[in-house]
Length: 400
Image (cartoon, rainbow, N blue to C red; front, side, top):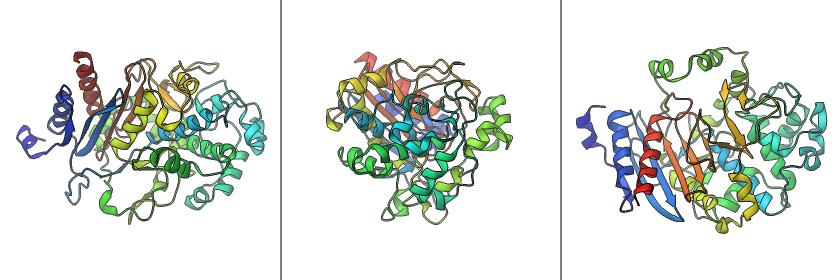
């Protein structure tokens, strides 16, 4: 976008005094970093200090991004799913060190009887793919899906290696939560009732039929050149191989396409807790802001928050990820900062999403942050638009 076009992009919303540089970085994203439309929100020490949006929500129609526009955040959904289990932990329903099979006896099939909740949530269970056919009908039938998941055999001895459970993690988390919740709610129902509603925010892992298409941003894919230049060569080659670990994790049984709908933008009344979270940056940042402070609004205990802030524990063979082809750190359902994928401080926890979205909590400074977009980028470890926003936010905090 030429520099002159910057004047035509109206950045809406507000920033607190001292945080103007975040708004400036957001504007520069349109001029210099190929932004189409999006939103950014940040909480600092319990106060909303950034809440801005702008650009285009639908590339085909040119309709603008508005205050209440929501968008799918792909794998940034994993952070929302992990929040539900953290709430369960604080209520005494779930022990991260317990074996999954203690809560879900059928899970013990195929050599999975010793897998702990911690190992599963750290992508160390060897369950990154599903061998049986799984389509939208199976995903929608939680009992049928649970039976398929219980029958799955790990790709290797659990705990020995790490492989990104791109879609499967959320399905396993969903069934685990159903087992420990006294009301046996689905993960999407639990998120809505216990987190989103408690914070008076809108975010869903079960998008209702009642939400009109006009509230939803469509996703514009990255161009071929951007993909060639953006992704590391080894990962790009793996992604093109239909038999690779990452292809099996992302493209089949059920594949990410399961949560899109050409008529309704996104599939309705369907839960893919690793990928089909839909919401505003405001809602995601607010939730992380609670996790970054005392957790009181969601009834979080201090020991739960301390566990989330603690360092990740590697598999036997370390943090090298057999899907992502690099050292990446995960803990208790969240991503943790690492040299390959830095964000916040060492105590931070969150989750990025394919295409550039990111949400995270940084308890060391009391930050809850979210960035969402309608234009998918092609950077595996930190989209330049998001990095610019985060750099501006932390510069503002340092100067305050």
